[in-house]
Image 1 (cartoon, rainbow, N blue to C red):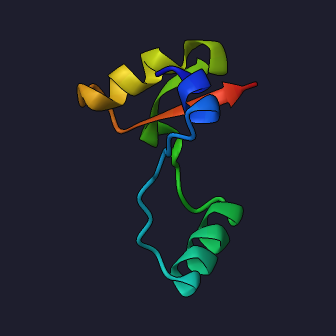
Image 2: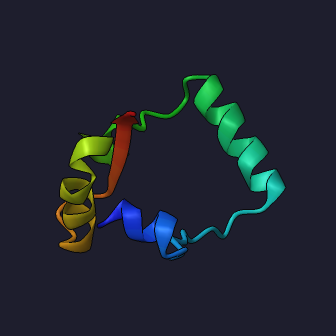
Image 3: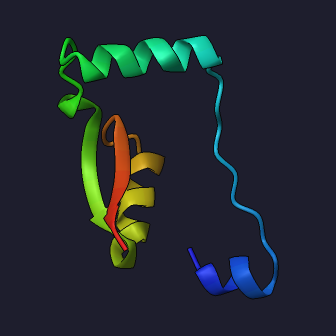
Length: 71
């Protein structure tokens, strides 16, 4: 992914979101209480420099979630 195109050509990058505020509050409560082990959800961690690797991981359905861990 060329971030220069996002910036200079004003391309858009969108995510999907489908939770309600009450769902978010409940999820935060459960995570904060330590009642859920969520480490298994993130199957790929990449730096911003290696973001294409994370995108490929998600696009090829190689795991649950990919996340950028630093900037």
